[in-house]
Length: 375
Image (cartoon, rainbow, N blue to C red):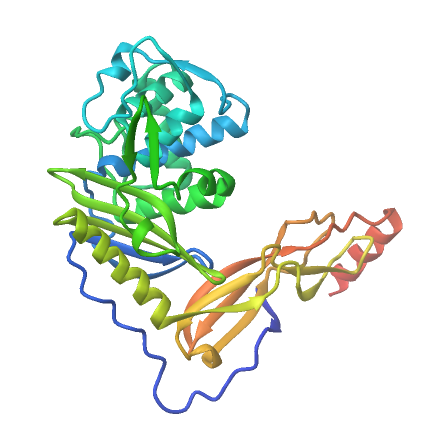
């Protein structure tokens, strides 16, 4: 049975009007989605689970797998990759690779990210998996691991295929995972505005990199079926927002609608920091351990997003499943912080042990066993 351990905030008298959720702006697109990555909360969405052709937004998964391989030393930025005939012949956006020539992984990643080069994507896929078909299998396994429930990849580029689809929600999940899991790689490649290879300079198609200094990524996409698409990420102060716009009517339109979503998210919501990284929320009793309690909190701190001016209506409590038995390892979940805004659920956040608690000796464990039996 769950027991209430701690009220993190005083409950305020909620007299008068209830907290009002800001209405999302009208967005001229087939589907959209905006979330606050700092808190993990969704601010607005429209047709977020409708399957669509993801076009070159697909390349976020290609990049995710490449960054993972670089971190695991299966690929290196300076490593030379020989361009195959198949990669060279890839239709659509190009890095202008030459068949048979060797190109560095770093150059291929820049070509993929900045100018959406399909030839660079295929070359990277072949370097990692031997063929684009086998690489697509890796993409689908990773999509399943990330929880992308309505996504299937048939290639590394996003070229049209009847078994290649995703959703605004899944693409937002992928983009957020890339930023979270590979922050250095994200900061190195995605803010780039231009790229030069073979004496050809090409510009990043993400117009927001020029229009909004807070935007530092991520990816554009276009096919006739998909329309004009853009995933954009913006950091202002402590907050980072992520917008997904699918099926806009033009290049300028996808930038305009994305900017509208981002501005709305910043102007009508506040990020409220509830706990600092490593701050103790509660000392939770531990049985059969060398210590009688464990410091519990959030390793990375906790921020929640609320409509502007509504922070005073927040309330929270920690819930757990007692008893908590040693050994407890640092990072183990020991409870849940349930947060509500004006009495309405806002989110549940795992509370973890901030230190380890080893098991007590045989006599200590025996004594606590007796105490638990009597209790």
